[in-house]
Length: 210
Image (cartoon, rainbow, N blue to C red; front, side, top):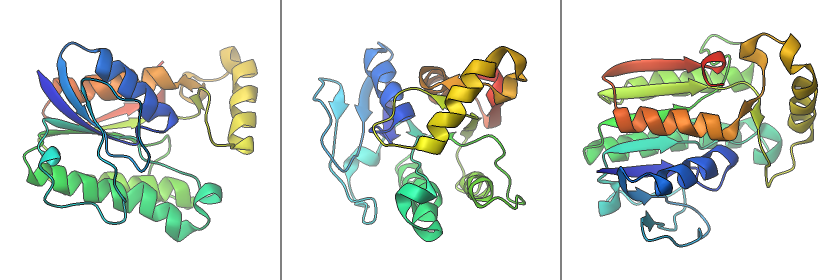
């Protein structure tokens, strides 16, 4: 039986991970720290936290594996600096704390085009996060790199929604790596990576997630 730590449970992909993990008989407990309360479940531990000041001494850091789906947009965050905190700094802090308590596997929802050398700030941030996560020392580390993500979001992201709609119409004509990936498929691969915990660093490109 596995104990999982899930950060980003209130988001589109994180919500799907939470549903799948709670329904999985191989998962004994899901620890999902959030800023607002989740719907209670017998297998769910839901500490309320401020990601700017995560508690270092909490015993709930002691899990087998971590799934991180934290992410935002510059428009929602308000600035590049605020975006970087959510998409880089917070995942790194979570990774280090959980690893310090013995976590063996980390699965990160990254993005298509993640590259430390990219001229695009978003892609460069994702690349730097992947690079820095590798330095934390997890025996098993998986980067899932979806392109456009399909599903209903609570937040209004008009540009992203339009891109998903257009890609959905043109789906059969597009190369597989540029097609919309349903959030539940991304969640499935993140959960599988955390549960299997295969040794080494693994990258799952968008075309393999469909």
